[in-house]
Image (cartoon, rainbow, N blue to C red; front, side, top):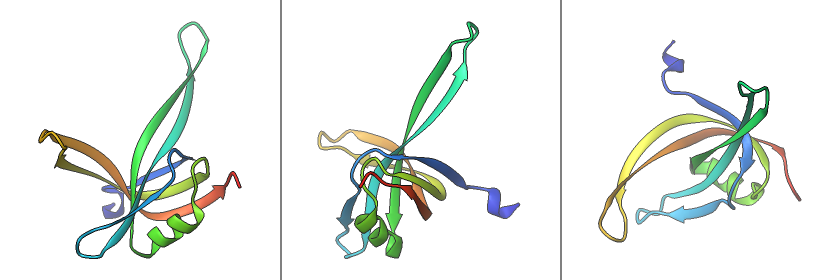
Length: 112
């Protein structure tokens, strides 16, 4: 059961064009968002659709794949782990963010 402790699997569409970032150390990563959709029927029998947005981060060799082949609107499947971190914004306020660190990605369909 150790492999089930922190595992996220999602299928959805890329929300923004992936952006390659470089740290001061020279290490590169890609960040982007992904939308997943879910639907259910309410008490009146009406179909309700909900969209959830997820922040994704991809490191190492997989980041090069994302940079070169993944585009806004593409349908992808990902597997990774959920992480939480904090940072200070430009005004000095402490902000918190949840992200999925992706370790596997499958391109299901693209808009090109």
